[in-house]
Length: 383
Image (cartoon, rainbow, N blue to C red; front, side, top):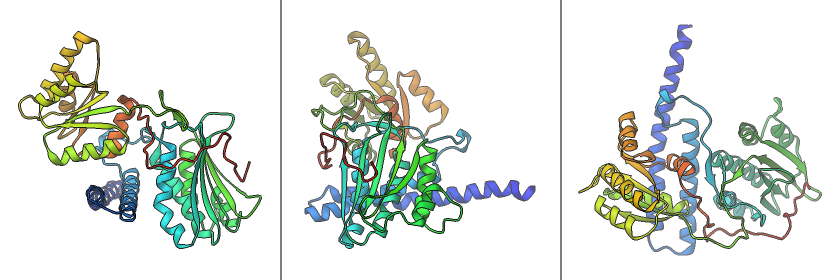
């Protein structure tokens, strides 16, 4: 009894240490890659650096899922739902694994549907891990031909369907056993992890042989469109605009990079006075304001904004940036009129969770994403 009681805290402490040791180098890789992307690069170099950053971000997200960086007193629970673009998610996975496919002479393609929403609410970290596992397995078993990722609205119901088709050996026993979770399965570890993740999201994982060469593995998940989101063939609309007020160059660059990566237009200022001046010159959908700013601090800025809003009826979402997330920090921000708080340094997962609660949707698909669409649902080998 005593050994079991003392073992759990020790294990938790060890896991927390592992998480800490992994976050630091991964954060460095992501930051250095972001810095490289801001320098002159040719197209090949830019694609390589982008893939490095995407791989590091994926690993960082997996670490965060396995070892959450939060106060143990907050307890567990499912990850918060976040807004994401399913076409961007699938394309990001394809870019990450394209070098492996190219090394084998395989074509790796992403096909989406014209009615696919550009923004849904779900668990993009788990979905990305599922797709990485499915595409990795498809590339590994396929020697000639192609691997295709298809994303489409689920027929006859809500949610989305993600498919990975290959021209490999077909529905092998290993594939079939891993997908259904058979205890005697001797391979397909990534597939069994994917199955568990899909079930945890309330979905299902299936596999079937293609009419031609290969097999298709697909999952259905309940990802609801975010209010105001467009579809792939809708006319593009302006992106939401965010004001960031922080006088620390590092935190300013982090906020700018993360928000622009999520598709928002961002203006950065370094003082409370400049924040109020910017607020008065153009409409913003959201503002991130540091508690500690030169001249007017973030709390004073919030009070001024709320006072000015009483005259024109507007209400901008204000999020306070704090050095900690203690209760008194949140209470001070709330008393000043802020809608929520974010701890510094800003982490992508925490930022996305806050945007899911307060921010208007990012409405424009990033231009670098190639999204293939058609008038009908894309042909599936298992339809």
